[in-house]
Length: 250
Image (cartoon, rainbow, N blue to C red; front, top):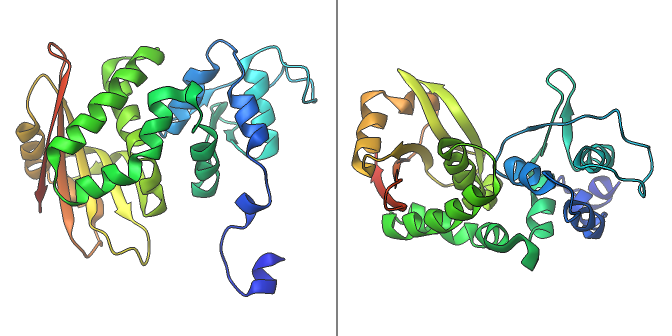
């Protein structure tokens, strides 16, 4: 109705819904709930059981009950085939962005709040600033998630670039050339920003990540795209727990 009245096609969902309920539910202290939210913030999906939900908003016995309610409310999507929940679109992602701004979300909430600055640093080619931002969020994600370092780094990178979803479609493990691009940032229509190919490395160096992008022709992931392209190589040294980043134009 708003779109018809105002003759403007955009999302009006976020201005007709309060975020207070979302903040309340994702802040509940059920074991594994915060892990699940962080995984979905990082672009992943989480397995959930829907059979225990009592169809009310007061009787919660597990994280699955909370996730099921959020599916009913439209804050999460649900894939019935693999029984996994996920954040379904950019509009809902913005609701989670606001809901994680409280102190209880610590560095993760701060990383989301600072993600626009990180995108600007990336587009400016400031590898040192990017490495420091990723270092801060990666340590926090690793301490919470029950997964290996490779998954936690990928999750950390996606969270750190959270608000980039306004400008980009972010795809994990995108088939390209002779392999898979760890992360591809594909500009949305009418967005005047360069595409990004991000390669993640461990105990090597950021330059080797850039070389791998060039050698395996990951830019093939953007077949049909006409515009500028940035290659972003990120390395994590497990021994000294330091990140490095190199950014080049392609």
